[in-house]
Image (cartoon, rainbow, N blue to C red; front, side, top):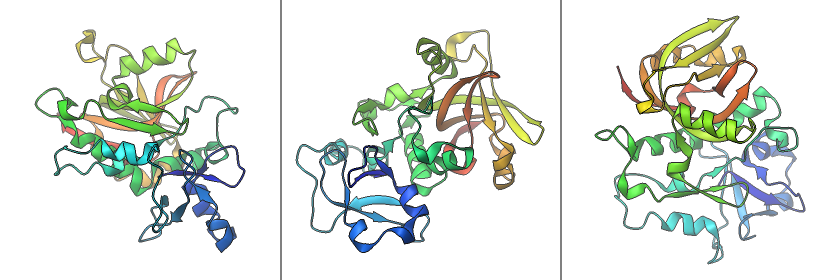
Length: 272
């Protein structure tokens, strides 16, 4: 789990925030994390190499029977064992982030937003998404997995087929909701990569025929702050059909998704 309830805080606490302030949490503090779906005690872990912060079950304590976390994992019963999907369905998707009112303290700046998309959990998540797409059917979600649902910070659920979107679908959603940013997975082809004053623009292929949902302009945007750590990956996604997990937004410069880490946000489906 990526978030937990902490003491009397009204907002869920991110595992990234706990990791950033790890030394300030006492042993007593560490006993105060609760599942925000069922309030069962859970514990924080930094991961085996201290680079994978997350929350997990407290020893010998299980979630309540009505809790969405174990019920989400039960979706995997009867699914193909060769596809590792537990991370996929136990990942808690961040809420939409369109204004200061809805942005949590951990995502107010570029550097802080990056934390949502650079860890091992995010990489596992996007590659699990790749594993349930059918390469023999335009990379649509495999029939066995079309009913999978994910948990969100809003104590809600969302279907996998509702968050994997073409660029046209993302633009339609943004326009329908007054330009309010939201979390989703873009499925599109990178056609051109351009450097502009140290930042990078990744234009998606645009076609007049809307058959593949790419009749409108859409791009990935990488701020110059993240170029150095991504520079050996930038050209790797050119002319490639990808899935990219991030925040879709309508800006003064058009429709886009912010890209912080190619390694952790993007999975290549095929290259042309």
